[in-house]
Image (cartoon, rainbow, N blue to C red; front, side, top):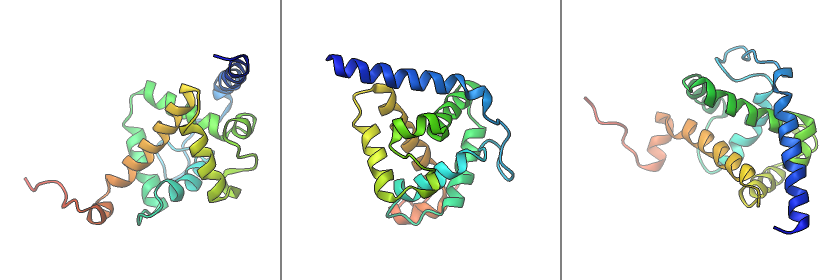
Length: 161
């Protein structure tokens, strides 16, 4: 590891650890109409869903409700990790430096969102690559579990029992 890489890693780790220590400061109550998703999570997810699921007929609202249902079924430890990821992405202190999205998620362009996803996917930091994989898996799972997604990909649905 080169000195510059070590400095980058140290800076990123410091920001991440500082942000996750602030998790207790963020409201934990679910947004109205949801079991788990919070008001702060919604702009992030509403911005990412159309970009991650581009080319599908995905409805942002359907995906959000599917995701919320899946998150509600997670173990407390896994839910805590997912909330920490969302917190790091929504706190202004960490959002800008770690994502390149300096304004709010609602104002981010598709190009900026694509750059953020590519930046995390191709990062030299394993933590960011894991965050990227987690985000994509969560959103893809939330859409492709829905019957509305099955016809477009040729899946006839589960067998009738």
